[in-house]
Image 1 (spheres, protein in one colour):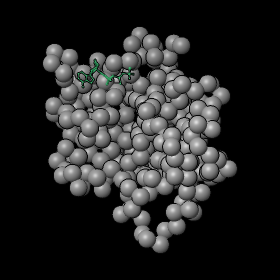
Image 2 (cartoon, rainbow, N blue to C red):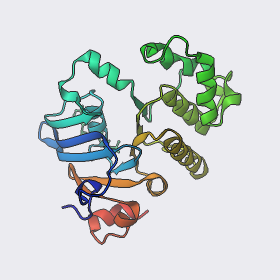
Image 3 (cartoon, helix red, strand yellow):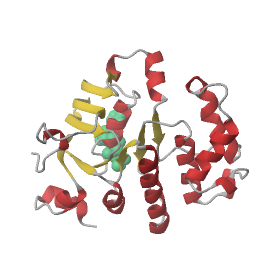
Length: 260
Ligand SMILES: Nc1ncnc2c1ncn2[C@@H]1O[C@H](COP(=O)(O)OP(=O)(O)OP(=O)(O)O)[C@@H](O)[C@H]1O
């Protein structure tokens, strides 16, 4: 049952940003295991939307359906006005170039310098940039955004965990994505480094007006970064609202997320 009002349910005369990503009635089961039971979400342009759900609640399954790595049983997924469940591979690849990922496992290539790690996606998506675009300038700009231009010639083994996460973020940013999907962006980091990454994510959103979907268990991350939050419980979007609204709820299922 929805406890709070989603932006989408606000009166029609209020100005709303355009929708960049929408999931409607998503179902996914593995045999008897009904993981997603009609999950919905709407991401508006320029917002940071956090999805929280306990371990095994289906967050990764949802993300995999979203990026086309897994086929949903039913439901629709629209990314920038295109229903991805109906797209051919070529159109899907073009669309994917506008989506950046920062996944837990998005490790850097150990045998490449930081510079080479950042050049790699540029070569893969060369169609997105004209030939006059100077790769070196793009790499430096991306590293400046994460405060690491001095690390350009270092190898990943010479970086701390927080620095690696920053370089991975720079590698995501270099493709100038319109939407960024973050899967547990602060996992494995100490509280101070986590806070630095969160502030960086916020800066990036402000600077480029990107729209971000952030999956996290980290209540502090949700508190600092979210414009809105969705709690994924029992395979559905159990509730949607701001951190302040949800953390003040009396519903025991919701309260369980904020007791840490
Ligand atoms: N390929 C698969 N085959 C069978 N079951 C799967 C598969 N992928 C996921 N599941 C099941 O779907 C459920 C949800 O898993 P999922 O990985 O999405 O959870 P999660 O919310 O991301 O958890 P965590 O926070 O621990 O990463 C689990 O019960 C899992 O066993």
